[in-house]
Length: 510
Image (cartoon, rainbow, N blue to C red; front, side, top):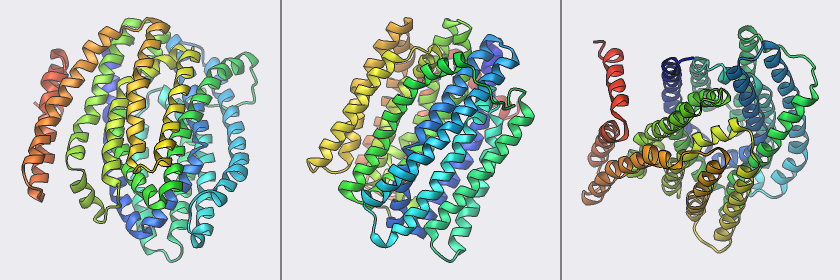
């Protein structure tokens, strides 16, 4: 496939995912507000932390889906026969079924014990918390069985399917909020019951679609020892890495619950909702790049891989950054409009999570090359060290009595100051990654765009008194100004011409 066709497909898939994301983000923020008001801060925090316990097992789903997508994309890049793809799919499905059994055993023993003996939950809400937990567990099992099907869709770059599912997700969330308001009974239990029903519907849709669309989506009980060994070798390191990642993410959530109570969990849950909505704009672009990078690497087209990673890093950051600037500048105002009654710490959590996510985009596409490369020992071993430092220092700041926001400051310092330089040095060693090229073409433009976009409005924000008019003006003008800076400093001339041409054809129809 030519570079022009690749670029066209990336743009098409990104637009499909963006259409989905804009609708999903608006509805998600709206429904979060209604759910918070309906449940109350305590129940909202319980839902967040109990769901977090289940999410501790989520590394299994994410890992297996990533492995399946990687192996299918590599074989598509090589032009392998359909029988090879079918064998990978069937083997992956068997591994996912085994993973679902493991999750059920762990969730109904260790997870259930932890819920009832360690989490800080009011006694009168323990029954509801256990119902929430069970619905979350079985909903997760369905998502685990759905993972190989989603991996097929990603590998074949049929991103428009996510657009359709985004519309379904929007309708389902709006229906859930409506039912939650009018239903009589324990609203926290009903919320997770409706969520489980949506998970069932999603699984049925993907099962039918993949069976109809892809020849390789025909399951059979095959056990290829060499393939299992290859997937196991690749997946073993990935599994361990994801265990560490989920321990940090959910371990932080649990630490906040133990040291500060469910109200702080509610603040973190709301801040995470804002951050996830913003981050998804950049991740949508990464989502469309990953199969292309993997297939190009499998075809040994390294020059195209480096160019795609460099360009993808800038675009992913800019797409996230342009909407992050007004959030960072007017966090309190935006949260007050969204929630009315904003739980304590929500604003500072939001700012720190957004900054952390912005910095994390620097190397996210480089990780795609590492997965395509397949030799993970050195990279993941260093990650284990960084994850251990993150969790250890987070516990120390909580134990020493610091406010909860210092946990996210630790993540910022350790992740960016220690983790990122280590990653760059390792990828240089693994496959001679052009660090100087990456710094000059990607990170330096990102730095100048960030400084020139953010700081003028930061000082304006401090000089003028707080008011609704000031906040609205800053939000609108900061987005416009960031867009101008990105166009003329962040993009190269050829990219700028393509953007202008696209706007003329699609927006103005000339």
